[in-house]
Length: 121
View 1 (cartoon, helix red, strand yellow):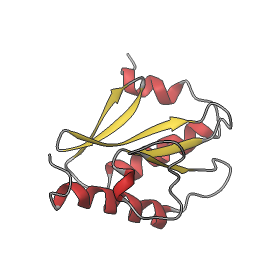
View 2: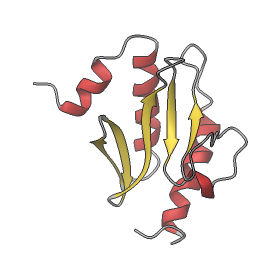
View 3: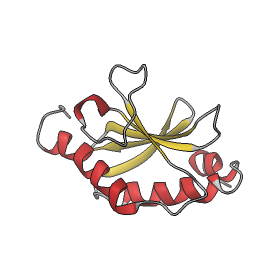
View 4: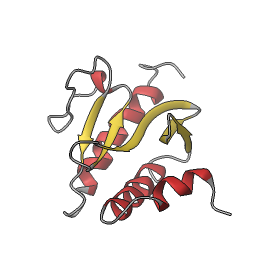
C-alpha cells in the first residue's frame, strides 16, 4: 500500500516526478529534525513540527517550485515574492540539473530562522 505522501509523487509525470523526489531528498537531508507531512494537498516539510517549506507545481507553467513559508525573512535574489506577503518561491526547471548548492544554502538559511529563534518553534 502506497502512503498518501508517496502518492503525491507517484502521480506526477516526468520530468517533474524525478525533480520533486530529488528536492524531497535534499530537503530531508538538511537536518535530522526535518520531517515531511502533507498539508493543503501538498508535501510540507517541518522543522521540529513547525512548517518551513512546501513542494508544489505551478498550475500555469507546470514546473515545480519550493515554497518557503518565512520567505519574507530570506534575502536571496532567486526567491520570488510575487503578490505573497510572507512566502517566497524558488522555481525549479525540471529539465535542467538542480543547483543543489544554491538550494541547500536557501534551505539552511530558512532553517536558521528557526534554529536562531527568529521564528518561534
